Amino acid sequence: MVSPMLKKIISLLIVINGLTLPGCDKIVAPEALQSFGVKKVELTIDSEHLGELNANLFARLQVPARIDLDGKSRDILVRYSGQTSINHTKKSFTVEFLDGDSHNGHRFYVLSAQYGDPTGFNPFIGFYAFAQAGLQVPQVGATALYLNREYRGLYFLIEPIDEDFFRKRGQRLGSFYEATRANAHFSFAGGYDVRLGFENQGETRNYFGDLEKILEVLDGSSPDELPSRLEPLLDVESYLSYLAVSVLFHNYDGYFNNFRMHRERPTDRFTFIPWDVDHLLESHPTRSTIWGANELSQKLLAVSAYRQRYRQILIDLMDQKLTPENLDELLDETAAKINQAFAADRLLSAPGKSVFDYAAARKAFIREWYAKIRQDLALLQ
Image (cartoon, rainbow, N blue to C red; front, side, top):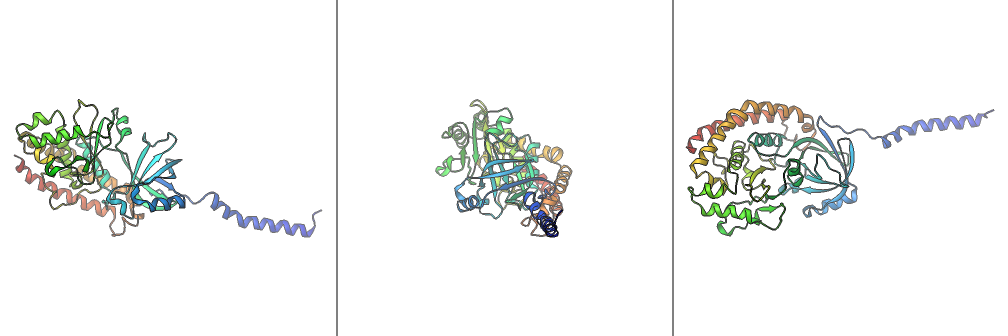
C-alpha cells in the first residue's frame, strides 16, 4: 500500500515533468523556418568560424559549415564571394560540397545576393533574355536564405560557369576566360595586358595566347580584312547576340566585366556566356546606346555586314522572342514567385516598394527603351 507521503512525491514529479516537457520539445524540435514560397536554404556556421570568416573578408577564406538544402543536410566549406559586393551588408556566398557530394551536378554553387539589383527580377529576366538569343546561360532559382536560423533575405542559387557547367552540357572545359575587375578590354592600346581584365580558368591556366591573338587581329585589321581574320577565332554571331541583349536590357556592367569566353577545342571558335546580371535596365550615361561599348563592339560594327546582322538580331528579339508582352508575363510570374521572400527581406523592402511596383516600372522602362532602339535602327544602315 502506497503511503500518503509517497503519493505526494509522485504527484509532484508528474507536475514537474509536465512543466519541463514543453521546453524540451523546443530544444529537440525547433520551430520550422519559413520558405516564403521559394526554396529554403539554411547555412549553419559556428561562432568561431563565422568570426574567422568575417575577420578575413577579402582573403576569400573558406570555413567549415553545414547546409540544409532540398531536405538534406550536408557538410560544406563556405566563403564570401563577389567583387564590389563583398563590402555590402548582404553578402554573396560560394559553397563547396564535401565528400563527393554536389548540388545539381556541381561541387561548387553560388548563393548570390545580386547586390546591384533592388528588384529581385534581374537574374530571371536577364538569363532568360540571353537564352532566347541562343546563348548558353546558367540555371537560376530564388531562395530564402537563413544563416544560423536568422533570415538573411531573398537570394539566388546560380549555377557556376565552371568545368561542371560544361561537363553537364557534354563539353570539355577547354579554353575558358572570365572577364573581371571591370577591365576586360579587346585592344592592346596603351600597353594593355589581358591579365589585368581576364582570368584564365581553362585547362591551361598560364596560357593567354589564344585570347591575345583575338586582340592582335582586332588591332591589326581593317574593316574589310576583319571577317576573314577574326571568324576562325571568334563566333561573331555569338557576340552580336550577346551585344544585342546587353543593349536591349542595359547590361552596362557586361561590356568590360561579367562575361565568359569559351572554346572546347583549339579548332573551335570562342563563344560568349553571360554572368552576373545584377545591373540591368539602368540607364548609363555613356554605355546605354544602340552601339553598346568596348573595343570588340566598335570593331565589329564598323563592318557593314556585321552591322546589318546585328540590326536584324535586335529586330527579331524585339518582335518575336523578347516582345514587351512576353516580358510582361515573365515579370508577373516572377513577382508572384518572389513576393513573400522579397517582402520579408528588410533590405529589399526598405524603400517601401513591392515587387509589383517594380514589375510595373520595368514594363514601362522596356517599352520606352524599345521605342528608342527602333528609332536608332537607322543608325545601323
